[in-house]
Image (tube, rainbow, N blue to C red; front, side):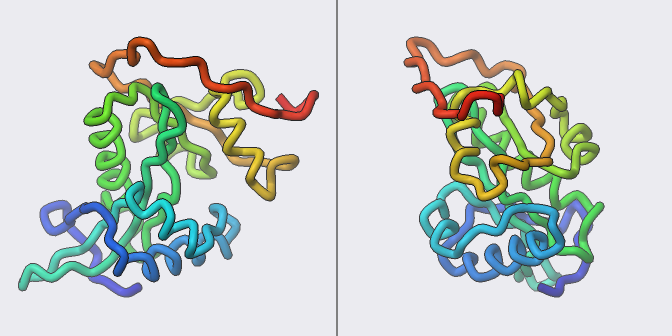
Length: 188
């Protein structure tokens, strides 16, 4: 995972490909080992490959070197989660994370999803990207809770929830109600 720190003009974000899975897995695993995000099994990355974006530092010959990843996971017709956002350590604070979030936002706009959501320990970063912290005990969409039920830290989650309403993206019409989350009493 070594790369020259990118400048904004030599950074490319593109949809992930199967050949990127090992780098995504390693990058997420690094941050999970630091206690900064959840580990994702390699199978999960393959199964959700179309959700992922990869950031590359571009060298003078136009070749890209992996410097980060992020994913947009649609939860329902009105909300999608920015997840799996991880930037290799030596290129943090150089715009890579913002570029990955921007790619997720552009895709949400393209498919008409008006709200983005993120679980994170990096509140300040997401606030710089226009997200607002929410009270997760009261303000979570039912589909977010449904995803949380699969998490090994469900009973003791200490991540922060943030949302961003995308200006100019209308609420989808005729959207069915999401099924209620099966959240044990007293958790919400």
